[in-house]
Length: 445
Ligand code: ADP
Image (cartoon, rainbow, N blue to C red; front, side):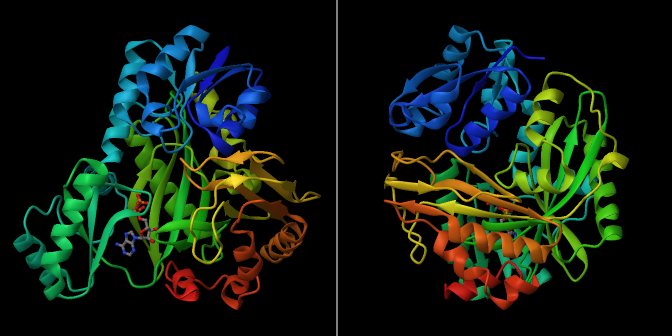
């Protein structure tokens, strides 16, 4: 096992990683930008190193500074969290050269899944059902038109290097194709430095269902069931639950086995999430994330398995101590993403937290780096915390969220807490009968 782990991230996930390391008896090194000097994980870590100014490119994405911090502090491994360098194969290669363990998969697997075109081709070869789409890259607008005629409108043009819900355009008719194709490419060039695009059938009313996997270096792979992340805004998750209200035990076992077999064949190591759209009882692969995800806690709650600890253990070469039969889903869990944003316009609301009273009691978990007096810097993502509830049933969870949100006080900045206070009274949220379109329609977007 590692003696010391460097946490190459910030915010709630940095604190989550610190806690997992502590629970495993591992010392931690926090790296931070000047703006994050007073961050909670920096205060709690055994050591901390300032790696640069506010701008993420000069700090949390600054590979030489992070590698130096690792060497100076003598950390043997780096946990990348999510976002930032977590899916950057070049970073992983550099760590390999410096004999520093990356807590995650190999650079080859990251590369394979980081490009959505090769990811889809690989998934199909491994026996995973995919969304009907182009055979690889669509290189010209003529090809795009020909493909859409074959498959029928609407279609989706997607950037091969896209992520975070960006780099996608819906095309409803041939007359829109020229503009949509060219803008997606030019936007992708600017945002991701890669303008390759591909196309998919645009599914009308699917749910977003993802399967969590865990694999060690000894060929053992298990799945931990699904998360339903259908409540989305701009293709970004807002509220997630496990298990999904629409997946029964036999569907879960079937897709879980398909995914587990594929991951085994791939020789993948670490935690990973295979994402699907689910419509009319069928699963369609969209992508694989090769890192810990924001919404991992709901899986931890219903399985009783600490994903961060397991992720660190398998990276250190330990064999999994859990078999598929040991994975038993109990109860229900829901997560609300709390952003420092106006709950109606979603405009970021950085600033000082003047008053802070977290909710508590049975069934409530708050993964957050907030505290009274904390200043939310304007330079990073607006996610400031995750409210996670765990109850015997979905109905219990909805009641727990209601209670937690009543208790929750954050003053000084605007947050999305009022949005959730409202959402939990909506009939579709109460019944679980929603698709990936529902929230945007409800918000009038
Ligand atoms: P990202 O990497 O940006 O998260 P994904 O490919 O995972 O992109 O897609 C994110 C979301 O976009 C999905 O959860 C879904 O809401 C929507 N989406 C993606 N592909 C399709 C599709 N073929 N049809 C309809 N919606 C889609």
